[in-house]
Length: 82
Image (cartoon, rainbow, N blue to C red; front, side, top):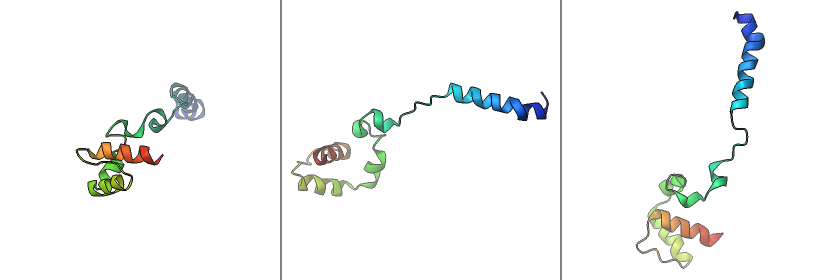
């Protein structure tokens, strides 16, 4: 296949096959499951929020923060607020 033929039809055929093979009904992971179901899905929140700040927020909402991890505290705080 020469360059001209490739650029006129080969490349467009390649992109058509590529688009047909991809899943165009993509839904973000956050739409499919709970944000706090895994440490990996809520990692940005857990890495940025200090534990003390989560404890303060939990106390303000009347949640007992003793013996809870950052993930457990964050889950309870955000489910309490919604």
